[in-house]
Length: 234
Ligand code: BV8
Image 1: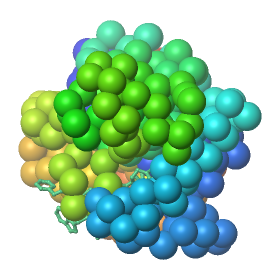
Image 2: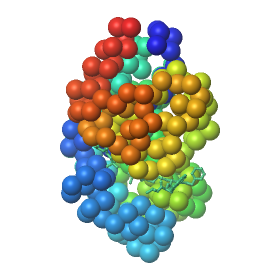
Image 3: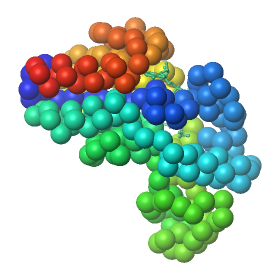
C-alpha cells in the first residue's frame, strides 16, 4: 500500500446496522419479516405489487429517521483524503454514504431514493410521495413507477465498471456483508485472482472470510475509522 494505491471497497447492510437500519439475515432482520421471494423478486412484484411498493415505501420513509455513523463518515474522509483512486461500491439501497459526504458512490443494487419507470425505463431521483399511490413518472407521466432496486434474478448495475476497477485494484476491502449474495460475494475472488490484497471488516465471520488475506471482526463504527486512519497515515 502506498499513497497512490487503488482501493475498491464493497459495503453491505452491516455498515448501516449501527445507524438503526435492519440488516437482512440477522435475528429479526428484513428477510425474517418478509419472504425474499415476496418482496425482492420480479415475480413477487407481479404477484402483489402493493405489498412490494409498501415494503420499499416504508424503508424509504425510515431513512429520514436515521443518520450516518462513524463508519460512513470515515469512508467519506478516505475518498476525500486518499491520493490514490477509491471506488466505493455498495449493495445498500440507503443514502447514508452520501449523507456522510461520500462522492461517486456506486449503488450496484439500486437506491430507495430512486424510482424506475416500467413504461419508459427511465430512472428518476425520488424523495416521495409513496409509490403505492401510483404517482406519474416524471419523464413519461405513466403511473408505472417501481422501486429502482435490483431484485433477485435481475442484473446489478454497472458490473463492467466494477470489474474494471477490481482488475486494477491494489486493495479490495469488504465491509459489513455476509457474502451471501452474488455476484457481489464473488468480488473478493476476482480481486485475489488479479493480485489485489484483500481485507474484510465484519461483525462476524462471513461466507467469504476464507478468501480474505485478513479478516478483522468487530463493529464497523470501530473497525472502519481505525482502518481509514491506517491508510491515510501510510
Ligand atoms: C443476478 C435488493 C444475474 C435491494 C438484493 C452466482 C452468480 C450470479 C448470480 C447468482 C449466483 N448464485 C446465485 C445467484 C442468484 C442471486 C443470489 O446471489 N442468490 C443468493 C441468495 C444465493 N443473485 C442475484 O439474483 C443477483 N442478480 O445474479 O443477475 C446475473 C448476474 C451477473 C452476471 C449475469 C447475470 C441480484 C442480487 C441482488 C438482490 N437484491 N437486495 C434491497 O431490498 O435492499 S440482495 C440483498 O442482500 C441486499 O442488496 C443486501 O445488500 C444483499 C447482501 O446482504 P448483506 O448486505 O450482506 O446483508 P446481510 O444481512 O446478509 O449481512 C449483514 C452482515 O453485516 C453480516 O455478515 C453481519 O455479521 C454484519 N454486521 C451486522 N452488524 C454489523 C455488521 N458488520 C459490522 N458492523 C456491524 N455493526
